[in-house]
Picture 1 (tube, rainbow, N blue to C red):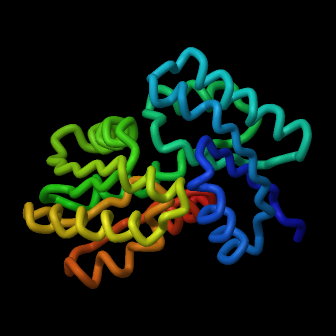
Picture 2 (tube, one colour):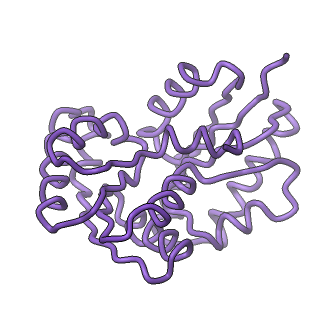
Length: 215
C-alpha cells in the first residue's frame, strides 16, 4: 500500500529535526514533507492572527497542490482552538495541531493540577486555552522558561536541557498530578523527567501520531 504524504508545517527550526526524525522512525506508513516558515513566528508571538492564520492555511493548500499531501500536522504551538478551526475551515485535507491530542489526553486523564512546561511565552497561554477547551474547570500550574528556547536556538542544547529539568522539578514541587511538555523540542526529555519526578509526563510526538492515525 502506498504511503500517505503528511505535511509537517513548522514556524520554528527547533521543531523540524525532532518531529521529522520521529515520524521517519515511527511511521513507516507515512511519507513526511517538511515546510518551515520562520516569518510566521513573529506574527504568532505578536498574536497577529490576521496574518499568521491565512499564511499557514495557504501553506497547507500549496502543499496539497505541490506534493499531494493527504493530511497536515501543524507544529506551531502558539495556535489556539479558534485559529486551528480557521485553518481547518473548508480545507481539502485534515489538519491537526501537534499538541492537540496530548492536551486532550491531559485534560481527560489528570483530575488534579496539570503542570504545563513551556519555553515560548505565547505557547503558555494557548496551551492553557486548549486545556480549558477540553475541560473548563482544569487546574493548571505553568512554568515558562524562554531562556531555555533561546539557548536551544543558539545550539546550547545542554543548557536548554538543564534549565528544563530544573523547571520540571519546580513543577513537581508544586504538587501537580502530571506534567505536559508543551513543545516538541523538549519531548526527548520526557523519560528523564519521569525518572526525576515520578510523575506521568506527556509529550506531543507520540500522541500526535495517534491523532494523525485517528486512534
